[in-house]
Image (cartoon, rainbow, N blue to C red; front, top):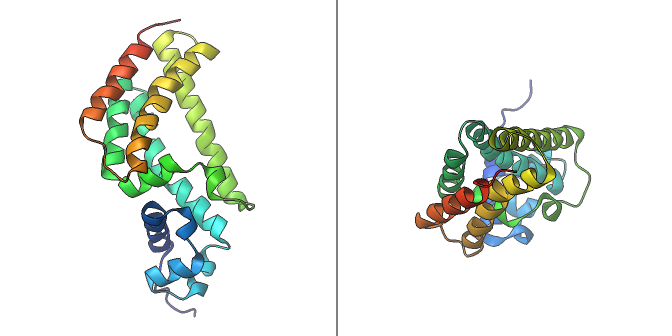
Length: 192
């Protein structure tokens, strides 16, 4: 019979997110993470074969947390999806800092385990499908210009203004939601 696990993967992931959000990506080390959680270094490596695997796991968890609900809302109401974006950032500031300030290519440099690659591919496919479905619903057809218009309105513009606040370690003021919605309405109003 094996020993009882005193630490779980979620504790390590949550602490790693806090380290990156508070101190930056360079501050995350396996030894530093173990110290923060008050766990032996071996406990971290028991769950994550490398720092890159840990970071990939936390990145995917963040994206799944945000994207799943956002895409569900987007399929029924673009304006509600934009409001959700703002509220999610306000309610999850550490996760939002990691998601908005770092691209996955910035976070990892090594080879990902196969299961994490599959999760990333699945998320990417779901995002593309969700945006295409919403574009079709909004404009009646999916063209490159309509996809670009949609992606700008529902992703690039809101993430851009929210990223600025995250860089300054600030929670976006509520009036930023008005800017996001005004941009969305202006961009999405013209059908092609």
